[in-house]
Image (cartoon, rainbow, N blue to C red; front, side, top):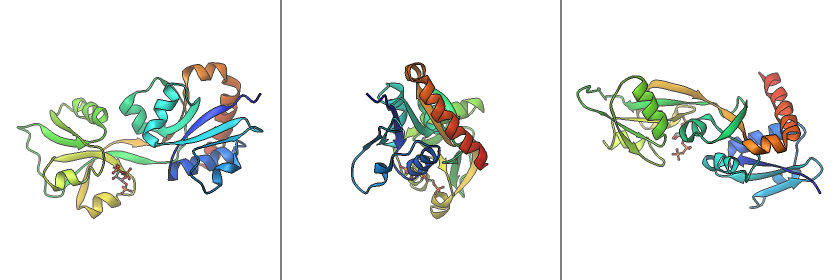
Length: 212
Ligand code: PRP
């Protein structure tokens, strides 16, 4: 019976890019490229089973062992601190976590800064590191609207090209950190399927370092 390595990929453009990397590294699964609504694909010959999950759920699948390995953004690892091993920086899906505000915003240090974000822990850690008191407003998306409508003073969010900020007349004021996609592993899978997981990590890692 084939022993599969179960791999959770983030559904969307980043996941497709990452799948190409895995395929190039020798862990292809051609059925994944068929146009359909299936979510699970396997290649018994290579011993890999891929599944598409919501990007923010990858770490949950891996932490609980439903997936042996997976790919997710460093932002999610920092925000939710899952109990997983971080094996590799895939140097793709590059973006940054930044603070942005309206162009005309002037900070009033006498009161807490109102910060809208999906990344509550990252924002709290950042502002406590600079000693600024904040009032967190947790949102789930379209964060850029918050300062425009006066719900918050600033936002802490992901910036990739900067287009969303520009088109909403916001400006980036501070960069908190660079972000990229990481290969992560379930801790016990890493012991039980060590050989195969290391084989994948090394082959993909070699490709990533040759690409630089
Ligand atoms: C992310 C982020 C910004 C946008 C930044 O949103 O929250 O809105 O991408 O990209 P840009 O700098 O290239 O414009 P996403 O599309 O993930 O959706 P969200 O609103 O659910 O966060």
